[in-house]
Each structure stands twice: as C-alpha cells, then as structure tokens.
Image (cartoon, rainbow, N blue to C red; front, side):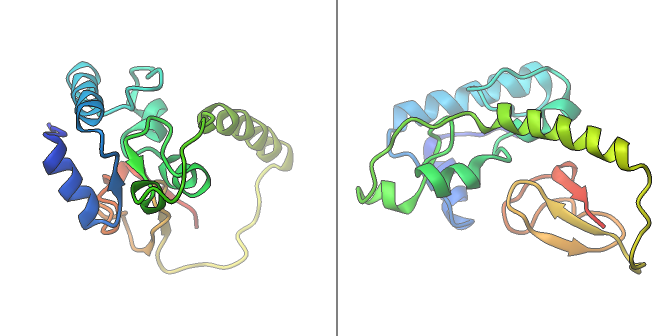
Length: 166
C-alpha cells in the first residue's frame, strides 16, 4: 500500500512533476497523515477534506491528487484542501481565498449528461481507431494504446484514473 510519507518526501516528489506544496509543514503533514488514515480505512488515499463513500469506483475523483487539483490551482492558486499551491502563491504574488468544492457541481453536471446520453440513445462512431484513446482524469494526459498505462507519466496517477474517451 502506498504511504504518503513525510512533508519533505512528498514535496520532493511533487516538485519532480512540476507541482508545489503548501509551505506550512505542520498543516501538510496533518493532511498527509489523514490521507494515510484513509488508505488504511478504505485502501486508497481519499482527500481528507471531502466525505469519501468508501467505494473506490465512486471516489476515484477524490483520490489524491484529485481530479479537481489542476482547475483549482489555475483558478484559485491552491487545491480545495490546500495541499497543493501554485507557484504564484508560493512566491507571495497571489493571495489565497475561499475555494468552492467543484465535486458537488461536477456530480450534478454528470447526472445531467448521463440523462442526455440516455435521451440520445446509441451514437454511431464517426471514425474507427486502431487503438483506444485514454485520458488521465487528473492531469489530462492522452495516450493511444490497448490499455491505459499503469502510472501516468505526467502526474503518476494509477491506471484506474484513466478514462477511455475514444
């Protein structure tokens, strides 16, 4: 089982992939410890700032790093729980403010999309590809292959965090 480890280990791993971690070591270590509790509890590292359902397939969007990290960093300078911060925040060029929980609106939008798909019925494929296209839902990395990679080469998310898009 993966362990999120210490602040310094986590910061080094994040920076190797182009991300920055909140400088408040005690705060971050408390988050990492909470993620580790969720790993022990559920078998996966659900975000400690959101209510996990305890079913991995329903919580994939909130496994750290969550699907909302990058949009939150772009729009607010930090992810919802404050673990990841933008370079501008780290340098003091941008102040932090309240961050809304994107998961709630995403779940509502997804329900509407599912209803729309049911209304449309089966959609014919426009073109046939030799291999499927997979997208990492965490960072957006795209790849064309028979199966998604075991780990995303960009953000290191596990293969279950990939969705088949074509």
